[in-house]
Image (cartoon, rainbow, N blue to C red; front, top):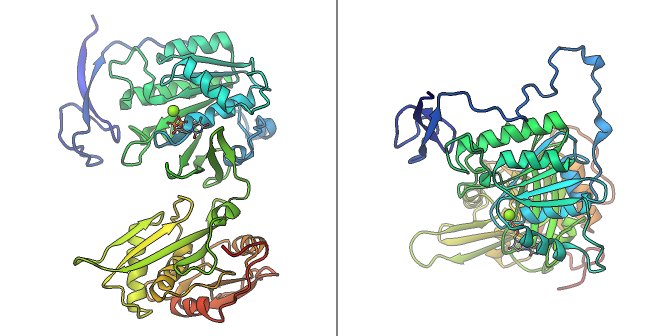
Length: 474
Ligand code: TYD
Ligand code: MG
């Protein structure tokens, strides 16, 4: 007779322990240990649980292995293809994660609708009924109603074994699983969404992908703390991790690749959530600057790199006299500690009296910047608000600020400068180059500064009232 015993698994990091512990000794999370029943008998092997990725295990010389690089499936959604590294790789498994309600299901359904013209697709949902998905699909279809594609199959199911039966029956080339937290394997005793279920379901889906050549897309929710639910454990099972982010109250969504075995990481696709689903934003810098008030104090333009793509964003700063005691720093879209640091440098090195000022910083468009290259623009926006003086409208600010108040050169400067120039910026204030590098691009005036103080003065100096090309006064 099979014996069973229980063990405790941390739902955050997957640490296993024989006894209950209030705090996980590995990751330090409190109350994350959950009891799981383990049967001693070997779990019934599912027919898909083929060991070995291809079913054959003899080593071959590297030269004899076909790479098949050009086998990617073409994706008609350009921004999505870009993040994947050019298209869908057959037999790959992709995790699409993000906060609840951000648009993961919408993105996957749109992809499925588009791809169904050339591929057979099975869309499995554990969260919505077939009717709900159908209603959404109707809405996502363009007005000149094409008939819904016949090659797209929907099913509401949470038992992974049954899903494998469906896969065998439908024989899709693309499988979408929405979401991994709702899926379960009956042979495990823990409930759906627990670390063991999520991990085991993901590995079985991975083996399905590798052995059958099906491209699997798995949706995974992110917990409050911002980790992909339950787990880190998912990230190394899959080939690609995509992260859909954005402010829920704003229209822009950024699809980021955090890990990609088949392409560049940190690549970004930009979408806008509309009434009819996610629309591609092919020129994001222009979109982010569209509502900008030219010559308003407290605004500066930064150029950040999102993967290989430069992005111009407006940074807004506001200072206001502190009302009660402690001065507050309230960043939106930039890191709190980074803002603290910039405020300290402005106080000590630029001579601004920020001790009794509340500081608010906002990145327009609801995007998050974690690149230090935006430091200078953040600083200039704060100074601009404090002095009630606008930063020159035709200048972009690029540079990392060091603790000594010096400016440091970020990477990929030519790409940043070219993007600024393309959007009609006449000049850019950048850190002084101490080593010889690639020449600065033509057609944009590059003003070099050694320190943050100097750069900020330059940003206000010789204020030109002339506006960048193609822009109207707000
Ligand atoms: P959804 O894809 O269900 O989010 P997730 O799967 O990540 O939880 O997206 C839900 C949000 O998207 C919802 O708040 C409504 C919005 N939305 C639109 O604005 N337009 C649309 O056409 C669709 C389908 C959704
Ligand atoms: Mg969903």
